[in-house]
Amino acid sequence: MTTKRLTLAVLITACAIAPALAACPAPVAGDTAAAIEANQQRLVCLQQELSQKSEQYQYKVEINTIERKIDDIQIQRRFNSLNFPKPVTPVF
Image (cartoon, rainbow, N blue to C red; front, side, top):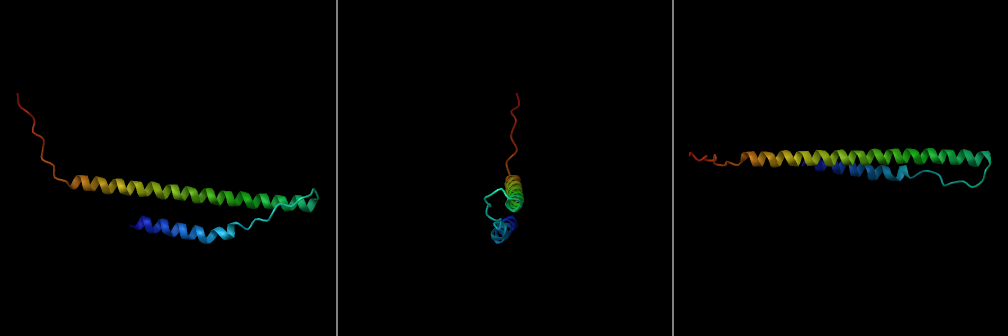
């Protein structure tokens, strides 16, 4: 239950940050020094966005992995709580 809350919190945070991340300027046409500088700043901004998105994706992957491990542990506990009769070995 807590992992679902954590996932929800991460997604809400990502949605809140997403509009701020999309603040990179549009490309500037031309080959003047100012245009080249503006395009360099745009590329840096895009690289930062890509880095943040890949980081968020990595967090999602880690959260999914943790959720799967928790599910496996819960299934194993349920299985261990079952009382199976001991197998009878035949005597020859």
